[in-house]
Image (tube, rainbow, N blue to C red; front, side, top):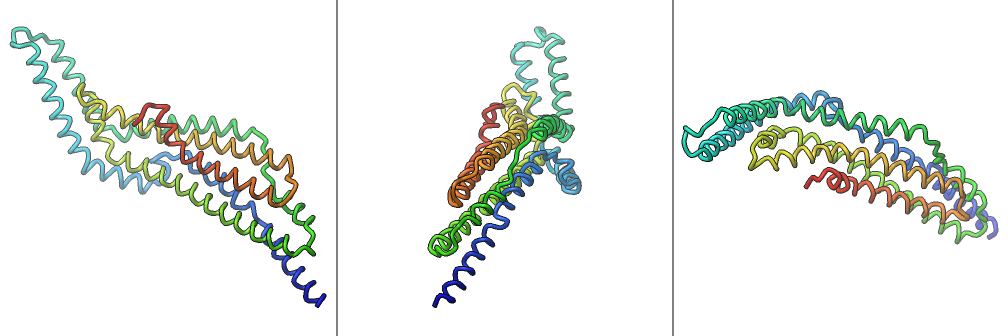
Length: 288
């Protein structure tokens, strides 16, 4: 029966090494893919999709926004007249201000997409500068060599330990794949949110020049800024994650379990951090 035991030992040990091979591939791809999805400009992300949404906005949203602007400015003019009680008390200055605010309102409604692109151009510059600094930071995320070394040190005659490690590696790899998928879903959801907010932006922009309703337009601009600034916080969290992984690589774990579960802990923390970036960005710009 020794020959059968040797065959099982060799087979289990081969399975263990196979489970360890490529364990951190999803991890490396995760940080790269998430970082690539942070700088999302509605115009450059997908030119065809951007054109379609812009055309829909021009045809369906801008006319409605123009009616809203017309209604708000008419009500505003009536209030100006009422405040003066009679036309004899009326001066040119309130009328001039009304004409000026109405003109600015028309420009905001018709140039909403240009304003949106300007906001994300500023965000792109911030992300570009941040990426330049992070690129100069030397972070060694190579944990595969450490894992391979630890696996080679496992006693293959201890089949219970080998089988236990196989289960742990399989479970951890599955968890890392799930978290990596969630992180990518979050970033794609941000992209969709940016496109959706951009599509109907003319309506909240039509309220910006009305003293009574301008909070709607102000919150819209703040929300757009928060969506853009979210990319900055994503890059900061990725930088923190890379440093933590680099520390893990610089200080090798004593066992396979310590290494893989330590990695899973950091990956879950990364996912939780990414999901909190929108809330942090909202707080920073005062969006609600």
